[in-house]
Amino acid sequence: MSKEMKNILVIGACGQIGSELTVELRNRYGAGNVVAADIKEPKNKELAKSGPFEYVDVTQRASIDTIIKKYGIDTIYNMAAILSAKGEQNPQLCWDVNIGGVINVLQAAVDYDMARVIIPSSIAAFGPDTPRQNTPNDTILRPTTMYGVTKVCGERLCDYYVQHFGVDVRGLRYPGIISSKTLPGGGTTDYAVEIFYKAIEEGKYTCFLRKDTRLPMMYMPDCIRATIMLAEADFDKLHHHNDFNLAAFSFTPAELVQSIKKYIPDFKCNYAPDYRQQIADSWPTSIDDSVAREEWGWSPQWTLDEMTKDMLEKLSARHKAGKLYNP
Ligand code: SER
Image 1: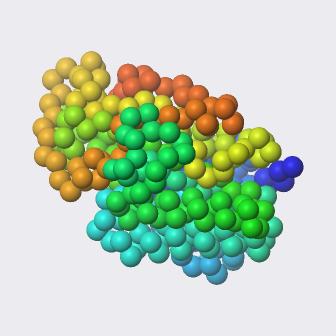
Image 2 (image 1 turned 90 degrees about the horizontal axis):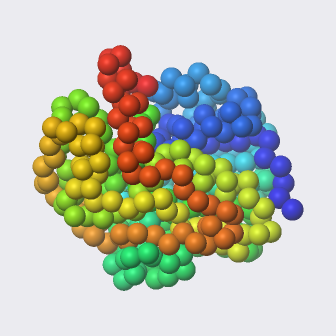
């Protein structure tokens, strides 16, 4: 039987996923019961105004413990991470945040007898030896990026804590996430967010991946729904814990450009692939998420064109109001 989640701490709450996840968790569990924590103050106004914020550096165990004690935290979502591109530029930092952070959160879960912990993984856990199309859940994990190495290691650490300490920890392998509120930072799939801002602002974009680079992607509302669905799933029905494949759709930059052109016919995109191309080429082109569907009932709701329409509507409205980058 899972324990009740009453007082939730979101570490990395100011990041791309954390900023929207925290607001949704506050809607569900009560604003005062969800503490946002990060090493930087929230810029997003909805996040800043909707509930408590605390400084937490996930690499510092004492900093996590202070907030656990202050609020009687029983559930942690650890969304703090260094993504793939930044991880290649600073592998040591990537290891310290992604693995140091994960072990701190897992050990805190043991010491404070937490009800639940959510620790995400990524499609970056896969590598060039993995079957690239319709990548199965349980397959070869030999990533070639530091980010991917930390994600595989994190998955194994989480399973170790389930087996040896009975920690209820869960996690998804997120595809590239597209969102309208907070920009991602330091990832290889970031182009698929930047392109919308540039389409609205300038009508043109230079993409850092080749036009035929197919990657698995997802719109933020599906990402948030999946995360909370897994967190609330019946533990006894889960055979996997921290390594659920998750999918919505896959596209290439050229296909995304075509989708944007349906709404902005004059939109122009150039291609100037850089070091991130090699990272993208090591990842799957599409994902088999049947295990998530079977174990906790996952199915995505958004298609590529629906997402494009929604992104352009939201960003255009903000651009007209003079606050494209300040939601
Ligand atoms: N969006 C991430 C990245 O590009 C993948 O998990 O690094």
